[in-house]
Length: 311
Image 1 (tube, rainbow, N blue to C red):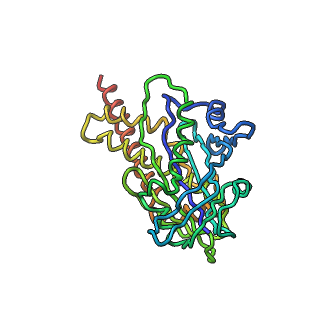
Image 2 (tube, rainbow, N blue to C red):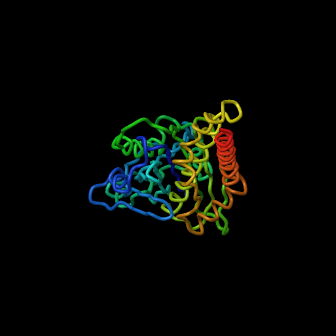
Image 3 (spheres, rainbow, N blue to C red):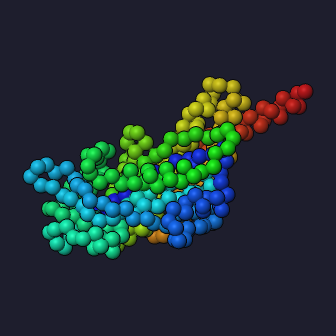
């Protein structure tokens, strides 16, 4: 069994973060279903899950063998801190009990499950899902996740001059959920075009729990990516210090307080983040950048005080 998904993360349109009430309305994508709302440790809202039908090839296996997937994936949208929007889609891929396609009522009764027709090999399917490029006809959860984020963005209020701009990142994840050990194996890879790939081996983990962990990883990867770019554009040591500080102010106002990896997680989240910190050093790099920003603020404050005293 495989659990696969993709998360798109970006900045919510508009000059400033939205309030909790507005964020809840923006992610209310399913009529009659409640929106998940959390205020601690961060303001967070998430839409109900919405299924989407799937009937397409799962892997390019050549003319001698085809693997077809039929069922439903689920997608949802979330806003963190009133400022960061995510679209997420995922599904559990299982072998079909029969060798032929069944009526849609069978698949609709199992939301979030895609059944394979053909000789599916889990290793082959995992490699296909994690690949940077997919065939046009193959399953594309990224397109589903992107639409979920776009639905929120289209409804977002737009007013005033935007102070912070950032590219959208994509986290594609694949989990082998049939491992027999007690550890969550983790491999995180940065690819071109804002694509990241997260490979997991997580025994006895539900699809919803894995999706929540991957959304948390995607959020913090986006925060780190955005902060790296802001510091680069600040041109510290190249432009006058006052100008560099002005370029860094959006990071101080909008980003630094959002860094709480694993805050909403459980034991699985702790394991995944422990592996990521050992291998990728997310928090170490974040703290290095934050210290650099604060050093610039300190030096700027001292310089301003010295100028005031000299007058």
